[in-house]
Length: 205
Image (cartoon, rainbow, N blue to C red; front, side, top):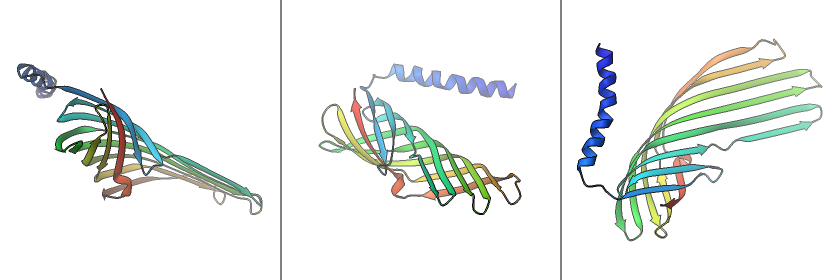
């Protein structure tokens, strides 16, 4: 009974908020669709919807994947990594000067990443394989600026100090034992770095 009441309360809250908003004056709507860049080696899409001063934001950032393969003197070595990061949150804006907007808010995020390494040598008859898969939820604060080029184009830059927790598995096999060794991976991180800077180019409509 208690669980049913909580579920009913969660369902009814958005309806109450919508009903309350409908009683107030409808603010001007705004939507933005654009591209995001991080370190200029990864890119993604961004979509924002709301009003001039408050917008919901959704980012999909494809983390720069790579694959490196080398073959020399009967030695084979290959390393690859890939992943995807999804962010959603809300930002608030304030006009600071002509064509400049201050942005601040918060995002929740989820990142999936995969790293794989293979090595073999025909000379020593040695083989090694390792793979690591991690899942990382996180929370980011948003601090940034917009420069409005015209009524439709906006250039943005934002800092995203982040707190995150990673969990996953690691798998290792080598020719010494030919046994598959699996282990759990976990870690906690926080801070601000160059990779926390997100650039965007968006179209308003």
